[in-house]
Image (cartoon, rainbow, N blue to C red; front, top):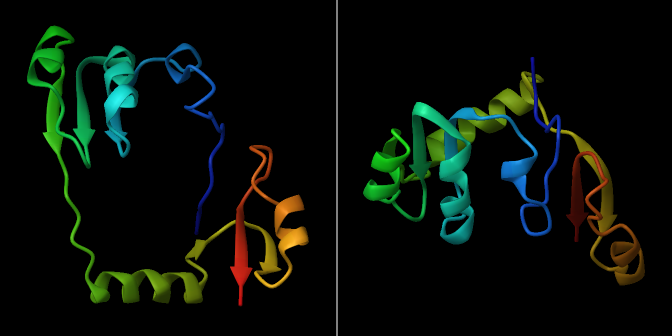
Length: 125
């Protein structure tokens, strides 16, 4: 069984993630910009910087002795169906912190993500 979640959550907007983790083999950069620039320093020599919306800078990769690549995803309904089937079968278990209705704005505001919640907040209509 696969459980989705994080062991440690770092708010990249307010915390310097590069000061909080040990060097890694691979960075999958989903943000780009400054976050990608700061990520080069946490990749071990021989490691990989993979961008999803911005290709890695070849000069940065060379100077850090790492490989760079770009990934683009084309979502197809067959992949989503397989994922949904695995969730229904219990092979993948999403961590859900709370389920709220969108029709109750005061409750939504008090349960908004604070950085301390474990799991996803689900909003229903």
